[in-house]
Length: 316
Image (cartoon, rainbow, N blue to C red; front, top):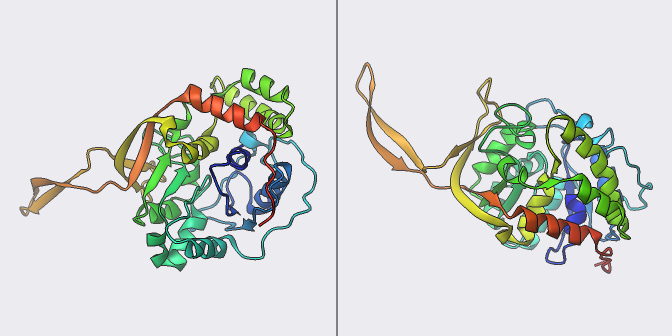
């Protein structure tokens, strides 16, 4: 849904789609992305295969949420377009270097590819103006009680990204759970003349079935909201600057995005058998966290864009 929303948003110039294993393995993700750019009439967009496994932990895919193929069991024709020969990590590096200070990264899965970019070329961080990511939470998780799924699938990669110094907007669960796609929306999508809208209605049916089975009144538009905020940041009525750290050691909190809301930390003095709190020191924020979304306006934006005729652009 996020990819299709992005292709339908003329404000965005999509330089590439880079794929990482997440809800499905990377090869399935590449096939899906190739099919989606063909559905959208945007075959000029390069699609590149990225990392198959997280940096350290074992991947957890999610067929019960998004179907065996990641598209809610909906099938699209086999793509004529093929993936780029370059690995996703190298493609990201090349794009950032060719447009220094101009290329925003919009990750909507585990952050493995982005971490690999930073490990391979640490100096590239100062050439990336912003990362707008879907992931994390400041109020509990959906993969575990503490951790959101994208971060939980590669906490070590997320730690590298959040410590990179690149300005980050973290579109977390507190924001995305305000944007519920409901059956009334999917009925309108199914009735649309747009092939994109009808496809979104099909994949949403599976996703809403899962969401309703666990007590939600609809399906949260997690990744599309990140795209929406990339197009129009005012869709967030309120955002807070925080310092986000990623927990990689805790048994119960592994993968948690720990929010320092007050931007303070303790400074202590060793008194032998105990420590003495001497002062509270300021901590620099590293993340902007949208906390209040104009949900009605975003849902209307989403519906209007995916129901519009596909935007076909000439090949570069």
